[in-house]
Image (cartoon, rainbow, N blue to C red; front, top):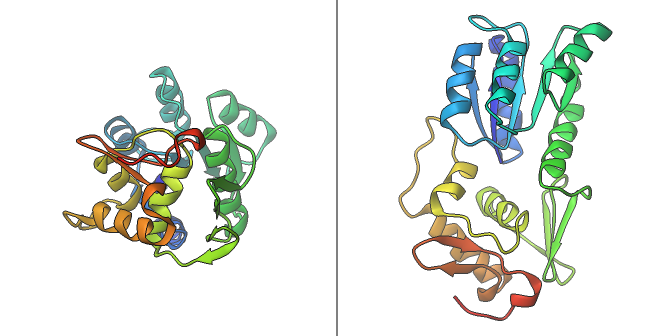
Length: 226
C-alpha cells in the first residue's frame, strides 16, 4: 500500500514513515499543505495521513480541495486539535477518520488497516482466495493451511493482487505499492517478485496478461493459463 504522510513535525513524520515502511508500505512524506496538494494531484495513493496545522496551507483546506476534485483517497487526520468542534469540522470536510495527538502507534496502524479494508469494500482483516490466506495484521500467509514464507515485497504484491481478484495491475501500479520517493526501482523487480510468488503459491495463482500486467484470477477462472 502506498501512503502519503503530511506532517510538519519532523520527529513525528520520520517516526510515521519508519513505522509504515516496517509494515511493508511505501510511504512518502511532505511537510506542508501546498506540497501535499501537489503530491496528491500527481501520485496514486491508497491512504493519506494528514495533519491539520500545516504551513502554507491548512490541512482542512487541503482536505476540502481534495474532495472537491472528487479524489476519494481515504484520509486519516492526525492532529492536536482535540475539541468536539475540531473533530466535526475535520470529518465534515471529508476525513474518513480522526486521531488526536499524542496517539499510540499501534492504534494508528490498526486504523490504517481498517481504512484500507473499508476502501477495498471489505470488513474482514484476512484475505482468502483459492486456498491462500493473507493476514494484514500478522503479516502471515498460508496455502492450504500451511505457512508460506514471503519477503516484504512479495507480501506487498500479493496483498495488492488479492485485494482485487480478477483485476489486472500493471507493472507501474505494482511498483507504486513497493517504492516510495528516493527508493531505487530495480528494472525487473516486479517480475522477480511475481516469479517468487508463483514458485511458492503455484504457477497459475498469478496470471500474466501480456502487455498489460498481472492478476489473481477469480475463483471460476482458476486453472486457466496466461
